[in-house]
Length: 337
Image 1 (cartoon, rainbow, N blue to C red):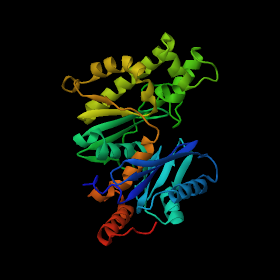
Image 2: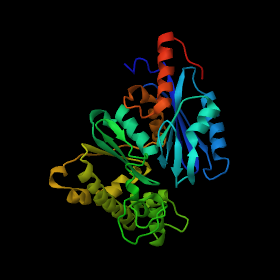
Image 3: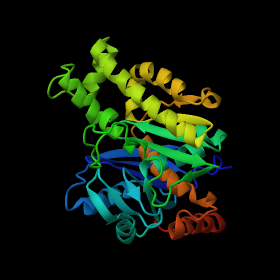
Image 4: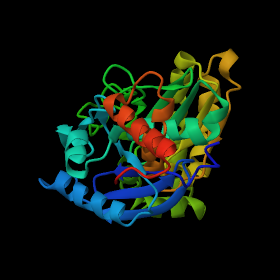
């Protein structure tokens, strides 16, 4: 039914990271019809004002279909989707009222959530998660995160931080993580950690990047492959513990890091299966092809999910999205954008 009416309305999704923002416009079926990327400095004192301007420009270049609202995915904790108060160590943001800022400036419904929670919602609506009620979405790349879907709904936890597996402590006195603690999983297998290890071992130059490390592994460099294999091993053992606790039907792996998954997998699979309890050793692991705008598509899914939001997770903003959708459906004309 959504496919039949895919052009009847649209939503905009925004991925915010430290150095750029990505935008997508999607139909009501979640298919991306337009996308864009802009440089962005999250640490600037004008960051939120800049984001408003970039969003306004992207919206103005869109189609004539009614705009239901804006979804924003953030690498950090968000108190409530409908409020959108953000804490993010990656962005250097502390109690930033992003939802209120965007709503006031753009006069549109705005739903904000952790970016992995947003991806999980996209999987539930449009991806492999449509076939499961209990699953995990695990992302590897700049950071390490997980979205927990239980009984068909994304589990956010008390303050929206459920699934933050990148900050599971794995070593007593390990390297300092960006969160300030020592020995977190992310401090060993996040992108910056892999690059640092590769530089220390002389696999890449002092200015080498994750892409250079990936190319070296693909070219057969054993030392480069070993770095990914070690990361896969640690991820596998840690994820096995999460699976043993939560008992999902499937794990869906995605993120920038899956580009090099061939090299991660040599360490990951044996470590994962060995650490799972016997009844869970057959759990399927689905590795999805990654596209950068998937984060923004996930953010747009926050808006598209509101008509099915029986629990009122999006609060007042969800009600406003539904009102715009139903007003258009009944009147046969677009609400103002």
